[in-house]
Amino acid sequence: MAAVLLALGVPLAVSVAAAEQQNVVVDRIDDTARFAALAQFVTDTPVESNGRQATLNSELASYYDVYGIQAGVFYANESAMAKAPSGFTVPEAGVVRDAFAEALLSRRSHDPEQVWPWQRDRLVVASPVIRDGDVVAVVVTDSPTGQLRSRILHGWLIIGAGEIAAMLLAVGAALRLTGWVLRPVRVLDTTTHMIASGALKSRVAAAGGPPELQRLARSFNEMADNVEDVLEQQRAFVADASHQLRNPLAALLLRIELLAFELPEGNQEIASVQGEGKRLAQVLDDLLDLALAEHTEADLRVTDIGALTAERVAAWSPTAEAKGVRLVGDCPPTTAWADPVTLSSALDAVIDNAVKFTPKDETVQVTVASDGDTSTIVVIDDGPGLTDEELARVGDRFWRSGRHQNVKGSGLGLSISRTLLAAGGGSISYEHHEPHGLTVTVRVPRSGPVA
Image (tube, rainbow, N blue to C red; front, top):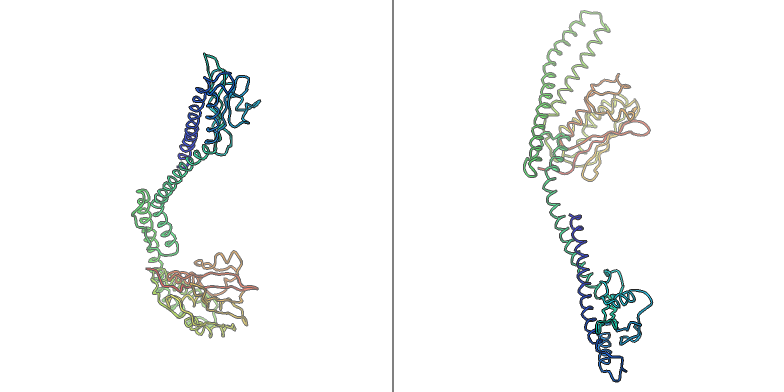
């Protein structure tokens, strides 16, 4: 649109300038023709005896006084028949000289070059005075161009204002059009982010926008439905498999215990089999918990995070003391929106992990605080910590550091915590604690859920 307006506006501006100058030139031609008509009847007799020359002088003086235009009638030898002001002459060179020479050839001078608003040139027009078929003198007018330049500039301002108005109208139409086109894209982007954040039931309203985007919205909803079905089948399979395997595993462990009575006490093979069986039972329990956590909707309510965290710290204190670890809590009253059951489960997993990996005589610090729109629960341990590569993977399902494979666990605890927190709009993050250890930050929103 800008290119079109520029392509139309520049020629129009040039045309306006040319038209304004042409009007001035026509006026000057008429004036020189009138002066030439008077000069035709001026004889070479003295002025006192020739009233026509006095009339010509009077006309030129009045013309100069009223319009500020220098005018003169000059013989071929450049002597003045009449002129105003008195200092007006034909110079040795320049525009006036060129126009004078052209008129001596019995031709009106060529149209002056175009005057632009930023120029201060003068406008010169010359006409021959013809008597009995011969050029006896030349009428020359030298006009200032201030008013002409002002009129040209005024015309250009009107053109510029019109083009700016047209451009604003075009921009407004473009904004409305792009808004109409991009609104479904923004909705699609928001829905995609919500699904990526765990809200798998989010869908795009396939209405508004171009037909192509409406079809894209419907295709996206079909894809989301298929993904949700696949994940639901996966969760159902994990839950069913975990549940179905628990009964035969329990029976197997029972038979192993009965078999242990038949063998000598302290048999290492039986003890190893029993340990692996119990570990497998724990993995199945964690898998079932994870499947339930991914399927369960959070029951959000205003919760005293400080009191809930203090309760979990008190519950884990005996375990920490038995291991020789100091478990310290700083839990002032702080409210937030959370599901007390799922938040308790998540804190249990985080505190259990911190106590588990903290050496004897070291400290696990649990701190509750408010930070703007969120409440935070920070668990800091003085354990061995994790490398940068391990820190990027912590919380993945079944992942455990290669340096801690001998520590009891299934590698699902932190995954369950993350899933439980995400269901209620919370999050969990991990970072280094200097000089050694791990800092786990649990965040829960202080504002209520949006309908």
